[in-house]
Amino acid sequence: MAKTDLQILIDAVQELTDKSLTGTKPLVITDTTAWDDVKGLAVYAISDATFTTLNTSADGDTLVGQTLPAGHIWYLPILDIELAGGAVIVYRHTNA
Image 1 (cartoon, rainbow, N blue to C red):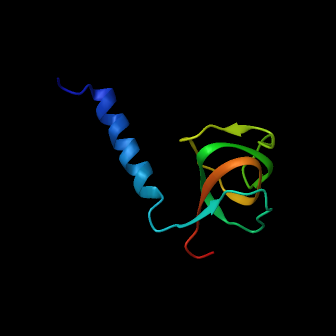
Image 2 (spheres, rainbow, N blue to C red):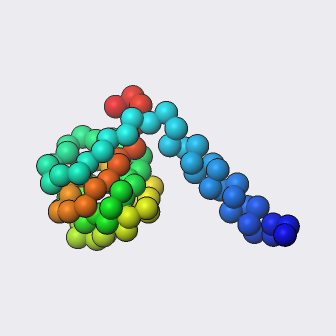
């Protein structure tokens, strides 16, 4: 079965997204310790993760108290992070 034009575009976006995190310094967080000055590019949930602290340089409302479901990624600049529960990988700048 041939791929639709939309599926081809989705696959291309996925490939670019996957490559965008290459060359980062992953930081695995599985506890409730506060991590300051993380300088992350994205956060990936290993297991459902809820945030006590999630400071970003993104505009808008806070994501504190929100749950990032396991297997999902939020692409946003992470400055400080602390988990209420769960486990994540923060993809950090290589120059951090």
